Amino acid sequence: MTKPVLKIVGGKGQHYELCVLDFNIDIESGVCSVTLENGQADRSKACSYCYAAYLYKKDPNAYRIKTVKESEFKKIADKFNPERKEILLRLGKNYECGSKETRTELYQVLELSAKYSFRPIVTSKLLEFDPKVAELVKAANGIVHISLGRDQDEVGAVNRGSTNRWRLAQALKYLRSGCPTQVRIVADVTMPMNTFHQKVYQLMGSKGILLKLAALISDN
Ligand code: SF4
Image (cartoon, rainbow, N blue to C red; front, side, top):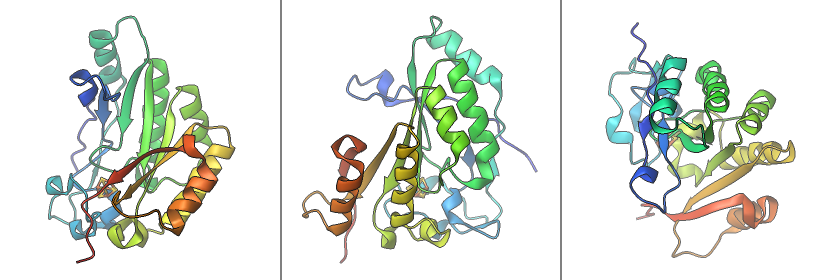
């Protein structure tokens, strides 16, 4: 089975000063791991609002884990950041980065981020509390960023046991372990905060919530 190699790609932060994301990486390819069940992918299980779902393949065997090479980190750091100032690297742009399938690769990415002065933003729905991830994120001066929404819009993640309540519990464990942690709530900003939003706000505090986004969600 062919394994694609992980690439570090430019982010909006290189073109738009208000965006802090300088670079992006995805550890998976083919299809997001939220769609996996018993190793088989079903892209219809992608989150209903996913802007990257058009990239996902129909083939149930399309899921691939990328090979992480140090040379890629060194090449990008030498080209864009020879003085090794900190630059922001988002994980999990178009695919998950916190699934158990890619944990070895996540560790590698976090270790290389620290070595080459990338500050990782670990964006995930599937990431459970993993003390090693917490330590590596801290060492790289990064942040764990847990994505929250509504269970009914995130069938694949929920099928894997990652309900929104479970995700909030993982975020709290990271926070309480001393790892910088935020959550992002995908919600309709025209609607009042619901009980879950209020609970998130109460538990995470105002500094623990990065954004409340308007999503393309409709009950109709
Ligand atoms: S977890 Fe993120 S990348 Fe994966 S399907 Fe949902 S919105 Fe898309």
